[in-house]
Amino acid sequence: MIFVDGLPFPTDSSQERGALVTLLEHPKLVSASNSFEAMQEVKSSASKEYALQGRWVYVFQREFATVDPALIDMFIFPSLHVKFIGTDEATTCVGLVIRNQRNGMTSVAHMDSTKVVDIGLAQMLSLVVDKNFDDDLDVHLIGGFEDVLPKQANGSTRSETQAKGDGYSFPLCTKIIETLRKRKEKFHIQTLFVLGHNTKRDSQGNAYPVFNGFLVKTSTGFVIPASFDRTTRCPDEIVRRIRISASHEDPTWKGKLLETYDTQNDRFVIAPCSWTFWQVHVALTLQDLSDEEILLQCSTSPSAEGPEFVDNLRSRQISVDTNDKCRLKDFPLFRQWDYLIKQPRWNLTFPTRHPRVFEWTADGSWKRCLFSPQDSWNEDGGSNFFSDDLDLPDE
Image (cartoon, rainbow, N blue to C red; front, side, top):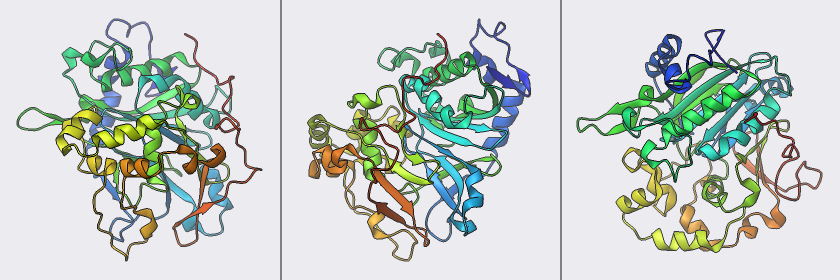
């Protein structure tokens, strides 16, 4: 169920217009959106000018990660604990934050489709609430700009292929809100910075997101607009980007968010994902297209993508400041399509379908670790909490 400003959100009075539209106009949430928009965006980079003071967990599209601030006390060196969790590069996607008010457990997801909302929420909540429906959960939704005019969106939660007339953002936001309403947990909506609240227009009337990302401070739950670059979208950036599209072909991940971070052991565990030669065929076919053609073929919002969108897909020469904290190994000079062409077989990236494990080192860089047979990982490619008894909402 949903709460706003400490009060239950009425279900009867919102049926005619839709819960999402009603919430977007709620005075408390309008005020929260205005305050969020007035914040200065944090630019997160490994360069000294923009370096984060402390560790962070970055979440890519279709991924989720859960951070436990209680683990902070387990570290000898305070600078080594996770202080932030965040995501960016969201245009029609929605960044979702769920934080337990009692213990501070914080989960962040980068939702890109209505198809991953039901199971995705269950994945996020599996570590946040521990089956305790009495906990109060703070919720923030950020992203999903107004990619169609409001009068064109009819509130449908159909799949993207069926609802292109509704755009992408509106059906996704609607699905998230409706799913939160159906669940038994107590969700306190604190930020609803989506659609019209997260939209700016140029002189020609073209729409763009105000912000594409955010950071959450794990100790307080404070959320601030943020952007990242290749030095902070790590580790294993290229493989994690490939998983976004490859997961559509891998039945292991049907309807699920991609696992990325091992909460209890405080390390990145990049869950395995298989791909077919169709992905290689796409890479070979699109590699030589112009930037404009790539945007039209590969983006849900071609005019609103950032300058790195095309670069992330195909090879571009990258300039690296060797004085920065991140190492040259974190800057591959080939991007997704080049990787797929050179590594067409997925089992070379994920041998025996084991995850790729990364741990922080004392100097702030990443160390690739060998997978241990004692690690909690099923042979089918999912962690042990992935099971058929995930708590899903009643239809």
